[in-house]
Image 1 (tube, rainbow, N blue to C red):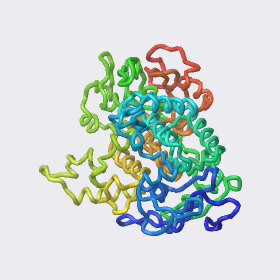
Image 2: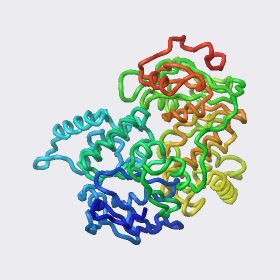
Image 3: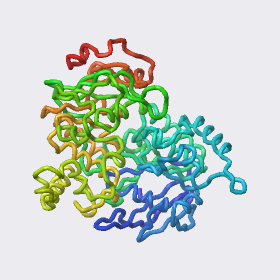
Image 4: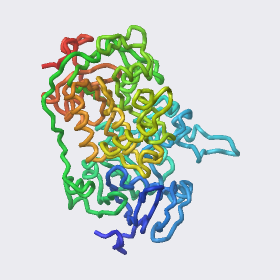
Amino acid sequence: MNENENSAATPYVIEMRHITKRFPGIVANDDINLGLRRGEIHALLGENGAGKSTLMSVLFGLYQPEEGEIFKNGEKVVINDPNDANALGIGMVHQHFKLVDVFTVLDNIILGIEPNTLGFLRKKEARKKVLELSKNYGLNVDPDAKVEDITVGMQQRTEILKMLYRDNEILIFDEPTAVLTPQEITELMQIMKGLAREGKSILFISHKLNEIMEVADRCTVLRKGKYVGTVNISETTKEELSEMMVGRNVKFAVDKAPANPGAEVLRVEHLTVKSKVHKKNAVSDVSFSVREGEIVCIAGIDGNGQTELVNAITGLEKPESGSKIVYCGEDFTHKSIRSKIVSGFSHIPEDRHKHGLVLDYSLEQNFVLERYFEDGFQSHGFIKFGAVRDYAEKLIEGYDVRSGQGPVTQARSMSGGNQQKAIIARELDKNHKLLVAVQPTRGLDVGAIEFVHEQIVASRDRGSAVLLVSLELDEVMNLSDRILVMYEGEIAGEFKPETTTVQELGLYMAGARKQEHENIPESVQEGGGKE
């Protein structure tokens, strides 16, 4: 199907013609055509760095194209900034949230269009509308919570509410389900279908082929900045879409041999962490262990203590007294982050911008953030820039990190998926005994997910202990050797993937079921899974 074949019977509510956008060293969009029909859900699919977010940023006024035109309802429009986009009824949920951390959820939602009378804010009225939208769309948020204190999932909901609050008719969703649970994703799919039935038009960027097959009417595929084609979802398959996207067949199952666990690497005893949002503890008296050569996964709905658990283990938060974190037989509860890194901790963080990268540093500087003091990268306190450059080029090639200017590319200018690949390259390339990976494939395309899963399994097979935290139940079932479900800050159950189902895990994640066991199950004390 050619996007230039515009039908008079179904005029495009938005049409982008011959859009070209360049950045230093790269053509992000190369003569792209895209048409969005009224009341349809149109998916935009492509590898990391294919130009999807750039194209949507052009439509939302964040970037100005060097070439090309945009039409709304057949009339040419000029979108100089997001205010112009909003005036045209175009809203966008960004992959990397555009929120002010020190503001409340409510303040972020109304920011820029604050209701007022003679300069006095009418926040009560705004709060009522936000609560109604929150209830109607199942996006339950606390309007009075500060953004810096809420989970990534809650920040995502805030972004969606921002768009709904503005009554936009053209809705851009940039990876909206990346941090949502299966139940929340199902709800969002229903919300999107409902919005389309109301006559709203949706552009939906996603790497998740199941979601695209479930919710989209049509799909446009980009590859390396170029237009590949547009297909009707009813006339294609997941395998055909993945081949259009990456140019080859992709394996959706993870190949791994049975685990052969060795000595205990990490033991968490009676870990308790206070919540920054509620009086109740975020993590309450949690105990478990991870051994060499096994992948233990923490599964659960976002906001049930996983973030605080990982932060306590990695040193980003202080646990309460009585908590104990033992690493290779040594008490590491109060060790510094530097000590943990040097001792063999690798950490792929939940928030790649806040805890994973220094966005204004170059790619090569980010690669050696945790290693610049090693002899290979410095001599008498002076950085060996040639060694750093060689190392960066090795990681860029080995992990297919795509950037406009190679090692000197500013991290901020890279696509979200390639930022994620840079963090994964840095953390997996280190000589680590423990890998703590939180949502490691968030925002990655199917080809990159396949590669990252292979690398995590290879890390396990080399004898590392892997603690995986994932909201993706397919990932949990595919990668794990043991599964621990967290609910309201506690371990609600322990499972082996071969003897459980996604449905059973869902019941424990929602709190409908809970296993009765002692605080440190015998199986955990021995480092094995329940039979």
